[in-house]
Length: 204
Image 1 (spheres, one colour):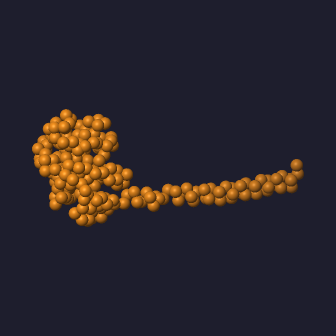
Image 2 (cartoon, helix red, strand yellow):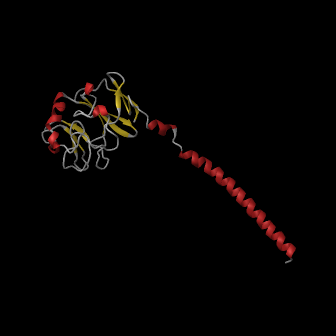
Image 3 (cartoon, one colour):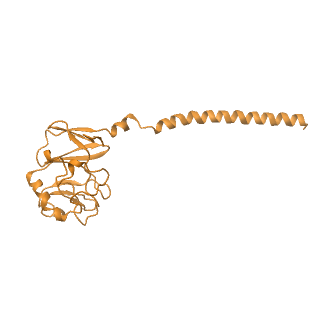
């Protein structure tokens, strides 16, 4: 093969490589654009973290309702006078009676009391119903003297590994769960409606 023929072959190879690289680059960018767009949160995902309103007008003393916030079950419990009275009786049996340690969310200032809620509505408990041990869903509330695991006190039981919580969602000592149930930010819109995930300081 002559030198001229070699140069022609090399030139053709070079042109082919350039054309292939350009085509590949364009294809790669075309593929990358929708991929990058898919990493942005969808409108549904954004809405998943939005505050949630709950109507509590039909919630009677001793009853619990569950609403979903950020994919988590949030319990709203209207406690009876007897359930409220039990809170001071179990203090010595609790791992963290003053909720000094938090789990996933910081404790709102207005919930830093034995009722772990707004004192003007102390009968209403609002907690994330997820066990702080391995993320199971506890059951309850159970009335006093109805569940051996709780003894003479009312409260909640995680059936997975036996962790128990009082009627403020505070974990009892010597249980697998290391911390109390989370209290999310919440506020009253009216006497019959609350918003979970938002308070006077903004959204959680």
